[in-house]
Image 1 (cartoon, rainbow, N blue to C red):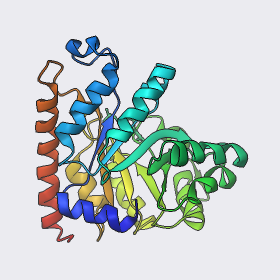
Image 2: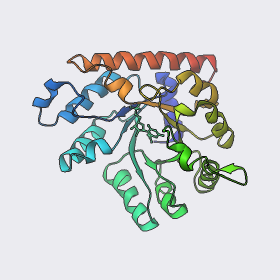
Image 3: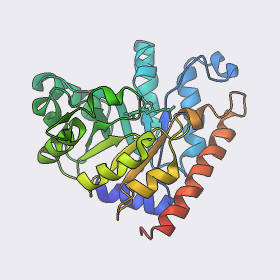
Amino acid sequence: MTRAELINQIKSKQSFLCVGLDPDITKMPKHLLKFKDPIFEFNKSIIDATKDLAVAYKPNLAFYECRGLKGWESFQKTIEYIPKECLVIADAKRGDIGNTSLYYAKTFFETYHCDALTIAPYMGSDSVKPFLNHDNKWAIVLAMTSNNGSRDFQFIESNGVPIYEFVVHKCMEWGSSDNLMFVVGATRSEDIAKMRKLAPDHFFLVPGVGAQGGSLHEVVQYGINKDCGILVNSSRGIIYADQTEDFANRAKKEALKIQSEMSKYLKRFQIF
Ligand code: OMP
């Protein structure tokens, strides 16, 4: 998906919501367990309920890989079911020596046709560059993450410059705002402003609203740019809003709540 296509979708849906598809068989409604592929049935209902409100879906591979081959099948069926206009982000946090990264890129971009993949940049240039050679595909590099442990490495300073800043500067030498995004945690609200200064034009994938307590208002206040420039992810806050047979309706209500706020922000900041 191109940047222009993504922006058009944000404009037409008045939304920059990414729904995280992190299906946990222990948390899903029991009536789904009778299906051959409960994970896919669950995702299918969530996608049907939210597809007019979300511009992106982000299946996190941990929730599929843990089930072995059948988990990979659920993943494939899920991404094939996501409407074509939506950005499909494989949240796999890959990155390895160049030759191996090349094959990770093949896996997610060519075999599974995902639009984007999350990347751990710790191994440097050869681990990231292979993800930037695919037309209309995106590398989404971890810069400033939402978890407590983000302080352990990302904020260590060298000559007064934190590591996350080195990551952003370096990656921007390798990719452009057409094929590179950064992960910025919603729980870091004021730090998002620092990220926006470093990368004024790049899209940010912002997880951490909902279950992790990040504020949509603050994410928008500090992170929005002239093209919107943010994709805000919520996983558990939407998909487990309810654990009864009514789960898809409740997921829709939660997504609608977020999308309505997003629509107001897009108008207030006169983005389009
Ligand atoms: P919820 O907390 O349930 O909304 O899920 C957040 C999702 O975003 C999970 O799939 C996480 O693995 C992912 N995530 C973070 O929570 N924090 C980050 O800094 C980065 C990610 C990610 O790369 O998506």
